[in-house]
Image 1 (cartoon, rainbow, N blue to C red):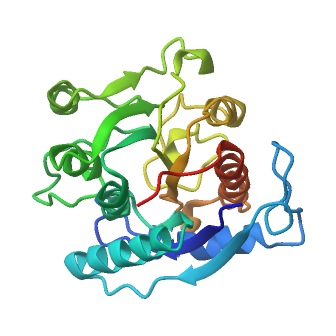
Image 2: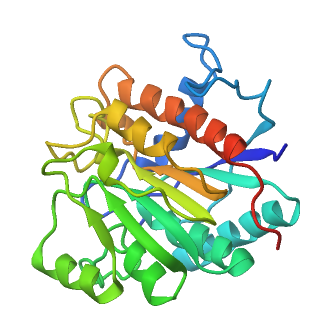
Amino acid sequence: MRAIRLFGLPTDINSSFERGAAAGPAAIRAALWSERGNRASELGPEIGTDIAFADDGDLALTERTEQDDAAIRRHVVMLYEDGEVPLALGGDHAVSFPLVEAAATCFGPVTILHIDAHPDLYDDFDGNPRSHASPFARICEAGHAARLVQVGIRTLNRHCREQAARFGVEIVPMAGFTPGRVPVLDGPLYISIDLDGIDPSAAPGVAHPEPGGLTVRELLAVLHKQTAPIVGADIVELHPGRDVGGVTAILAAKLVRELAALIDRNGNQPTI
């Protein structure tokens, strides 16, 4: 049984519109361990009982991107050396770059399933190449993605279309969406979930809400159909100051349980 290690990345220094995502890990953690619900996943197993699962708290970040990237990479590589699987809580989506970079360093280029309203492929955004609007451009240009499949995208402008073509990104459009249109991907698989990929009716607590997104049931269907070994995952962009009744944090906590169960079900990751 592989241990799953949850940890928070409380940073939003690369947010472009409004800061607030740094408070996301604490809000997700509060919902995850609340007595309001239990520890069960829809796949059946319970975290901490059937699934080896530990919460390491938040990494001590500095609000200096280069130093924080290095700290994230070191932490993730350490987990891989111990045979564990990282499950990170953002923070803004910029943190996915060092997370994926660490996975690719240990296992080679990874297949990525990316859930988001936005493709996050800007060459830079407002002059910042490490913007939360740019992590997948950085990942692709560094050769860390063997395949990148994006689901939930509904804000694709000309620049990002050009970037998607340049990097060979596969975008499953929301128009006419069904979970069956999302491929079953090969491993090693990394899953990145930006909460604004879900329709704001179910996930209002984000800085960049975009109508017309995934339902919770659609997202779960996309996740549950994946069968490849998962080497890591992140859930990012919860903005508690924009949440309504804590429903987005509760959803994020549910996704923690579902990802943990999926990681456990899908079996052994590659060895370093």
